[in-house]
Length: 307
Image (cartoon, rainbow, N blue to C red; front, side):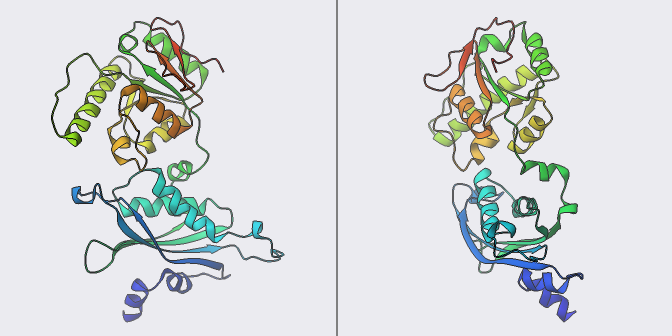
């Protein structure tokens, strides 16, 4: 029992050594890598950064005859890059989610066999609060592994008020489906008046929720218009060539680099940048100057892009 307790609180490198199965793998490790970020499910954790401490061990294929060639080994930089990439991607609520994603990104390297990821919050109390996971490539879900592979470049459409109620909507969706390209639809605000309040954060939520009402109005017109609020699910839908309607609140509020403006057309441009969109088309609305987007009238016969 005492040895089990010792291992439970030991550095992941000792855990890896104690549970290794012959033939013994090589191991590389990262110790006490401290990063400041915003994370947490509770309101006091929003709007503030806190320190996270990362300890990671990766079991790798033995480096026989590498000839001192750095390109043939798993670089230490891959571990810190995996951490940085996932912290940059979006704001998360749970350490468990972050650990899973870091593990998936590390295990995407062909040399990696198994990884131990321990993450601790250092600023929530007198001690360190954290999680530790052990993962192999075989244990990671297909969906999670697909999230860190090359992302598809979806088409992004911004629908103005007139376009959102166009009788051509079904024909447009038929054309997008026939193209085989994933598409994300962004919406304009509805015509109803929004409440106006003097507190900025409350007004931000009201404005975003007003946009999400428009998203659900659009979704009610065709079952292919599926409202999605998370980057993870938008990634998943895009990989399967599906049509999504973006509900912006979650991504905007969780963004590490939020949009400079929350006007609907600017949000659409920001989303297109986040996903590396193949095209962004403004339908029944002018494309912002210098955006690289182009416009179509609200009565266009097709939305299928030029390329």
